Image (tube, rainbow, N blue to C red; front, side):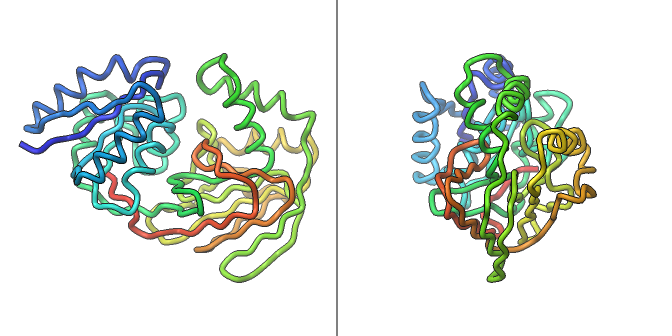
Length: 288
């Protein structure tokens, strides 16, 4: 009987992840494995527990929760042979949405999380790993504001944060280097994508394939507030790429240089520019 290490997001999906714990553990046991819940008392404790389990040779780690829990687990398993399974119970589930169809029920999702691990690219930065999308500019400002809000929970928090940040919208002057070619430009929003979605269902990079060895870069130029709102109406369907202020690019190694620009990856702070993002093919093994 193989051991399956398990992390539960206590607040993911407004508490639905915690309520799903027994079903997931029963499914793991029913498939002939021993579930071992290593969830910590805080996100930091869970991160440390995941890293310790992987360092001890864990063959599989399953997370039950949303994108935050997925990012926590990716930080532990990237660059190792540990297979990551995800039972997506969050408000956004952007990472899983970029990989496959989200299962209809918890039992089906848990069984899928026990499946064969398939290689997947990841983004390596100077400070850690990004699984889905790194972003900067207005989207980063919104992320920072949303992370500081206690209420409301779920995707509506990002809607309110977006409206609160709109009055401070400004373009930043960037020096963007993609595979050795440098361009200077003004931008209100930039995204570097391994998978297609971020921000609770925004299809920011419709052509992104997480196993093609490339990163997709979306750049929104120096638009005003009303035009940015139009962009956001289009981005959920992926139709924003036809907007005249939007550029889409591809590359393997991307460096961003700018003054007063913070960067975010999978909703977590990376740090200020300059920063370099490099795709690492097969850095993850995801059950999907």
